[in-house]
Length: 494
Ligand code: UDP
Image (cartoon, rainbow, N blue to C red; front, side):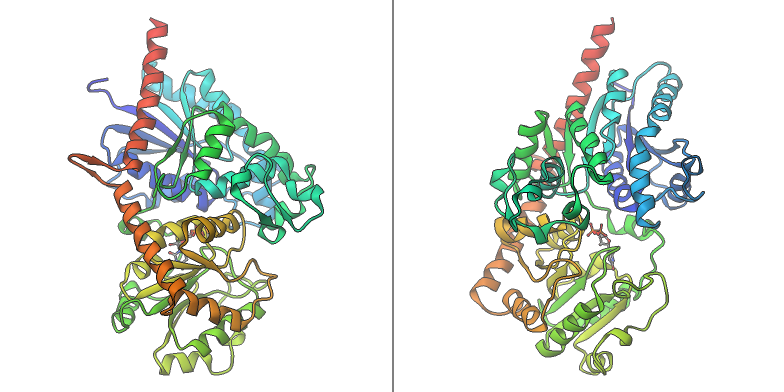
C-alpha cells in the first residue's frame, strides 16, 4: 500500500441535490490527503463543476460519462433533474441504467490508465444501484451513498417496495418490514408515493433500483449513529451489508460560497449578521423551505398573519408561492397582508429575504432560537449542528419521515403543517411557534434536547489524539473494508 495513492470513484445522480452531498463527501475524503478522487457525471454537469471546484482540491478529477439526452427524446441541455420540468427528471432516472456500458468503459479506461491497477472503490448514488453489478465484474468494492438520513431513507425504501398504504384503505398504516418506524398517516406521503400503484413509472423504476442495493458491499449514510438507530438497523437487516453512519457530510462555509449552484443571495451575509447582532440571544425564528420548495399563496398569508401576531423576531426566505414562476422577479407584497413588510421593517421585528439566504451563517448566529423548516436533511443537519430546534413543515420526498423522526424519536421538532394542500391556520402556527420558542416546559425541553444533539454531532466528528468519534470511525471502517477486499482480490490473482 505504501507510497501508492488509491483511487476512489464517486458517481452521483444528475441533480444538484445529489451532486452537492457527493461533493461534500469527496472533499471529506480529499482532506485525508491519501486518495485520488474521480467524480463522474454527464458532460454539462462536469462543465459546471469545473468552474466551481475549489482549486485546493487538486486530488479531485472530474470525469465525463458520455450522455446524449437528444437520443432519448430529451432537450439538448437536459442533464440536471432539478432545473428541468418534472417529466425530464423522471426520464433521467429511467434512462440512468442506459449509462451502464459507458460506465463499464469508464472503469476499464481508468484501470488501463493506472497501468492495470483497479480503483479502491466505487461510491454511487442511491438511484444507481445498477453500478454495484458493474463494479463487481471488475472486482471493485462498491458502496451506495445517500445524503439523506437513515430513518428517512429506510421509510422511503420500505414504502416504495411494499406500498403498504395502497390496499389498506385506511388513512393510517405501518410498514410490514419496518414496524419499529411506528404509525404513518397518508398525509405523510410525497405526491408520487401517494398515487403509486406499483405499475406507475416511479414504482417501476424503484422496484428495479432498490433491490439492487443488496448487490453493493455497503451503505454510507449522512447521519450520526447516536442520533438515530432504527434506520441503520433496518438497512443492516434488510440488505445484510455493513451500514456506515459517516455524517454530518456538509460543505464547509468556504466551499458553499463557491458551489452555490448559481444562487444569488437575496441579502449579503454581512447585512444579515448585522441585523442578527442587534437581536437578543435566542430570539429569532428562521423560516426557509430549502432550495426548491415553496408554500401556497393561502399558506403564505396565514404564515404572515401568524408572524404579525406573535411579535417574535424572524428572518423569512420568501419565494413566489406555488403555481408562480420561481425564477421570475416578484414583489412579495402581492402575497402578504397589507402593510406587512413596512410594519416588520419599522418595528425591526422581521427581515424578509428574497429567494436565497446565507442559511449556514444564519443558523450559526446566537440570536437564532428556532428554524421553521421543510425538514430537508441538509437543513436538519445544519440546524442541529448549531443546536437550533425545529418547527417542521415537510413538503416532499422523505422530509415527512425526517419530521417524524425529529418529533417522535429525537425530540427536537414540532410539526406545524404538511405539504402545500394543508389548511394551516395562523393561530396554529402561532401556537407551535410559542411552543418551541416560549418559556414553557415543552419548549425548554426541545431546546435543551437540540443543544444536546449539537454536542452529539460534534463528538461524532471529533478526531483527536485519544478520541475518535463514531462518524470518524465509520469512515475509517468503510475505507478499511474496501482495502481488505482489494488486498484479498490481489492475493487471489497471484
Ligand atoms: N439553502 C441556503 N439558502 C436558502 C435555502 C437553502 O443556503 O435560502 C441551502 C441550505 O443551507 C441547505 C440546502 O440549501 O444546505 C437545502 O438542502 P435541503 O436538504 O435542506 O433541502 P432541499 O433543497 O434538498 O429540499
